[in-house]
Amino acid sequence: MTGPIAILGGGQLGRMLGLAGAPLGQSFRFLDENQGAPASMVGEMIVAPYDDQDALARLCDGAQVCTYEFENVPADTAAFIAERIPVYPPPKALEVAQDRLLERRLFADLGIPAPDFCTIDSVEELRAAFADDDSPRLLKARRLGYDGKGQFLLSGAKEAERALDAIGHVPAILDGFVEFEREVSILAVRGRVGSDEERTAFYPLTHNIHRGGILRVSRAPDPDVTPDVEALAQDYARRILDALDYVGVLAVEFFWVRGPDGSAQLLANEIAPRVHNSGHWTIEGAETSQFENHLRAVGGLPLGPTHAVGASAMVNIIGDLPRTEAVLAVPGAHLHLYGKEPRPLRKIGHVTLRADSAVEVERLLERFTRIIG
Ligand SMILES: Nc1ncnc2c1ncn2[C@@H]1O[C@H](COP(=O)(O)OP(=O)(O)O)[C@@H](O)[C@H]1O
Ligand SMILES: [Mg+2]
Image (cartoon, rainbow, N blue to C red; front, side, top):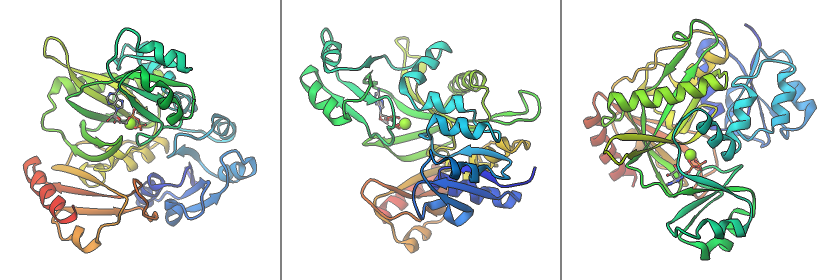
């Protein structure tokens, strides 16, 4: 196939897609609302709102296929493009991932366990939810949340008003607060060519550490993951791929909990129909990165192997830029800066530490944290 790959969104994920696609001979055309978005250096950039139909027509003109790196693209935008060129992952995946309620309904329909939750559309409903159980719950806006934004942790009914003020009185879900052992995610990828077996692949489970709702560190492969947990995550992810007729990389975030009998259980929290922060380690730490495999998938090319090469830890750079010299002085450290203006709580880059074993990576991580703080 010829022609550029059209990408909705020009953030760091777009930039890393562009960097991965260049060696494959692919070229890129992005659309982003902001001037100077991180992907500007890896392809043509159209700066326009997502509902600007002239701009969308230009985005599609001569492009072979469209994908997205930003999941809050309006549904009408995806539909407009889908009439012109193929859009992968399918717009249905966008629709589900944009709404926490649709996401949780999908999990329920597919028999995938998830945290207990209810919908909240008013302060009365929120108060009533605490009527016979005053344990802490997490209120989450159904739409537009990321990095813990649009969430409020309530310790009881007395905080109902304040919680709804905080999220802007939008439709929400109320999650039981899950006392998880750890958070893990799986990156699955499904291509367009070959048998189901050939066109489906999974990366090893990633162990994710969040603080304040923001991903800080991902480790992979997670040495504590047993084959049964790995198989469980793959089974759940495969059900979602099948149900959405999926093409591309899909991330599924899980809470790992212990069942009453002590067995490991995974509760699905959310999905991302795109390349994902918890898969950044795959650039250096896997045989084929999530970015390259996403492009192979949407471009109708065979997928590359997804196994880990040694062990990796990915550390997000949030808020302040570290000194490049200091980062690169740590052996095995790979720096990725996104070209974004530093701002408090903003992800502006990441570092992947890679070594031959998980033990070695922990040593590097200690050293890195000592130097970078
Ligand atoms: N029900 C829950 N119980 C405990 N912690 C939660 C729950 N839901 C979310 N969190 C914490 O908040 C983080 C961000 O929430 P998430 O639902 O993934 O939203 P987003 O990533 O879109 O901001 C999670 O990774 C987890 O650390
Ligand atoms: Mg999340």
